[in-house]
Length: 214
Image 1 (spheres, helix red, strand yellow):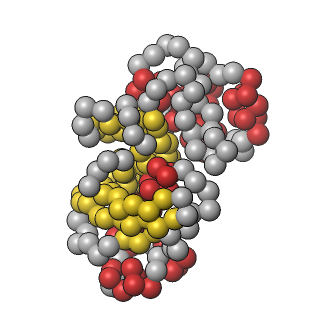
Image 2: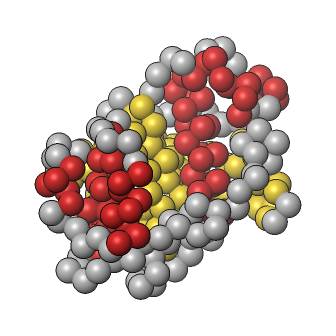
């Protein structure tokens, strides 16, 4: 497992990306797992899904820099959290990579996706007509920036039932390999404008967001 990207966004927020190169057995040997986690692992399909789960936990241990047991369950909405550490976290994975975003204070959200043309076929499932009109043409990378932004905000707000298409609106923006966009969340439990960062990482798109960014 190799650390390929580590970024400190400020004194309180950082994220890291790892390339997964180990076996499940190797990753397990680096963790302390309780009965709940071992039961969860036994229910996962073997292969990438197991490797992704294990890799995010190994990376979490690296970022917390601790040898203590890390209790990382999920709440009733499926949002992972640290039960015995104060930091707020967000986890993501895609194919050969796993990533963790961590904050000492407010909530965060991160998403990593392998860029593929197939997103053109589902664009109208997560984007409003006006959002698609603003993008113009078949801009695969820009669509992935939008998807990652919506996924990152979805993870930050943490409530099920929030729709990418109905409750989130991305304001028009000029796409760059690394940039910022603004996303308006209009959901039953929260209405807020988010400043979301996105960037091209190799053949992937990365999106991340933190509370308090205007």
